[in-house]
Amino acid sequence: MKSSLLMKFDVDKENNTINVGREFAAPLAKVWAAWTQSELLDQWWAPKPWKAKTKTMDFRDGGYWLYAMIGPQGEQHWARTDYQSITTLKGYLAIDGFCDEQGVINQELPQNKWQTNFTQNTDTTLVDIQLSFDTLADLEKIIEMGFKDGFIAALENLDELLEPK
Picture 1 (cartoon, one colour):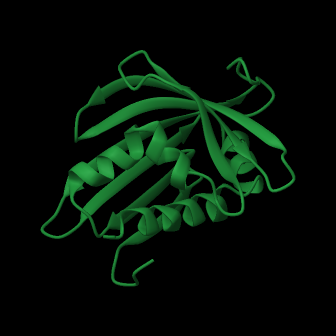
Picture 2: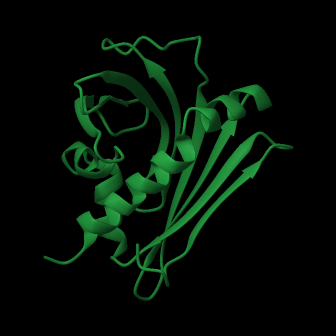
């Protein structure tokens, strides 16, 4: 990650939210594509040495993304993101949770709401994300599972993907 680019990760236990702000040295259209096209998401979403693999993606209001995080020993952790509303090149609202390979949500693990917003600046694009949880226990469980380190590592993968070739 280029040190001059914004990276903030704030946990607000009072409001059961995680707020992430991340700036990328790329134009809005390129950053938006990386967040909304499965062939690009698969290249950066999982923290190394893990890989992301999309089973299905329908990026539209009411659509969903079903994918696995695949570990170095071949272990798979499935997740599903249900898109509630999308405003092209501006943002989307989605519900995210762990599931099985068919997309059936695992009720034993927390789900959360992702409000993801994109803003074009002069030479960069800012992505602001607010993750909202039903309870403090759900928020703390996600943190305990390594969300912070994993997500920051994935965002650094996105830096590499967005670098001019």
